[in-house]
Image 1 (tube, rainbow, N blue to C red):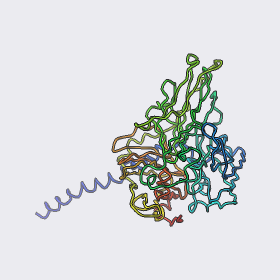
Image 2 (tube, rainbow, N blue to C red):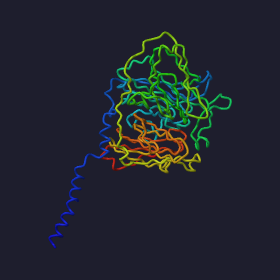
Image 3 (cartoon, helix red, strand yellow):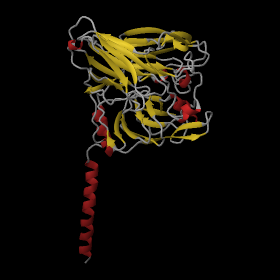
Length: 482
């Protein structure tokens, strides 16, 4: 009997030992597989500098000609609205001497550019605010070719609305040979009843409680009814930048051979149909537009269809002139984009709940995980490691969520897989949306994450992601408070 009991105990132990062996020998974790698939998607380091391009920018009150030639009192970079378009080649170092001649402190944030953390332009996190009369030098070598923009990160809901924004184009090396390389800066304006001034009432209760400040005057490059003239046979790279405080756009390119080739500055995996794409505040779209010789004399209206209540004509494209030979290079939309098809088997690292409550200096506070920015708790992410993040919009308002210094890929929207063969730096959440994204942060530092409806950000919908080298990520260091 004793022998039988001993044999029974031995048999019971064997499966347990086998299971332990299987655990030790199982393949790499799903997270490790996600990281492996990500390798080579884009560069971790900036390319070696090929030289320095120097720029000078001054922010100051100005009077500029906008709309139909009306003189408007604005705040401007170098006296123009939109501000200057800075163009550099990939590999060139930017040295920008900035002077503040505004009556308020300010900074410059280079939206979408993976800059060194100290160059990110966030007061209280990466630099002190630049006081009136002071200067600051921003210097960095961009890591990615693409379409980016820059704007203040101090009192953004006022300073951007007054006209402080410009674009940065980092060109491919070698250049691709487009007939024209064109930037369209999309913006909207809320004016006084007589149309003579920018409405000076910022952060109103209506703006804060709803979807931010939407103006009734929509412009492209500061003009109403902007028109782009192209020759038959030309191939255009059209770069769209949404600099609005809160308005989203859904441009319609019906009748044109137009393909999306880049989103938020990063090339897509393949050329994509622009139908259904939305530019939330902060978003950019690059399009490859081919005009045929048969379209000589035609005029194409580019119309915004985001709102079901009213459409706006953003601009038009007129085909005229002597036909030219269409450049025949291959589409640049050939990026390495991870499928991450097994991503949903990984745990959610952090669920960021987006909501609001009464209180604060505006009477309403917009929150991330029940905290306004004045009381934020930084979220730690390990550099080079896979993370699945979730945004849960528990409010009835729009929230375009933007992450500084990193790109991410949308995985799901409301539990359904998202077909997005590209990276982003800003994603729009509609009311009650739940969006999961995959991210492998490469750039170490304290990085802002916030709603890019600038009134929501001003009222508290901001926090900090603390990206640390892997051996330090288990500890969350204190981050500076605003």
